[in-house]
Image (cartoon, rainbow, N blue to C red; front, side, top):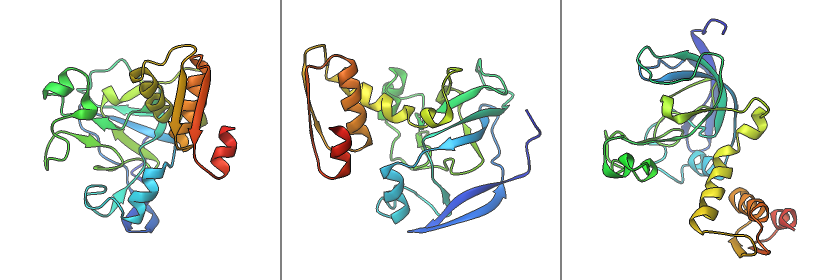
Length: 219
């Protein structure tokens, strides 16, 4: 890896509908964290609501703030105490939910239901929502939130993995099996992902509600 610069460019949100491209310091990483050079970051519907100020004061909890929670990139540096098999130069996808790691739900693996969620000063974080994300050239994440990419996967595919996994989880929770019929409310990104995955799983029929060009895509 090349030397890590002192500064980077970032899209910084200063208030509702107020974003500036700024030169700011590359984020510091703790001994148990990993610094990633961001290659791509998606923009989802939640980002537009956060930008408009519709989710305040929870998302974001402060200004200035860096959004971006669907990102991938290359490992630039690894903290001295990080427990990981990743190496500098590895290509990774970031998972945005960071649990406290100590509550009952985190221990059983349901860290997205962390009991610290919403508690000021707790261990729960949602990168790009409650703490800075990566509409920037570099980002920081714990080792458990970084997943090594397959060699054949490109950056544009990697940025939608979070959404596809959510859709797959929904179908898994619904116990969808071959020949089942699947109903989907709304042809947003997640709805369209569920539609495609339901077909892959062998659903006999899929029904989706909605309107406009996204419904045309679903057809």
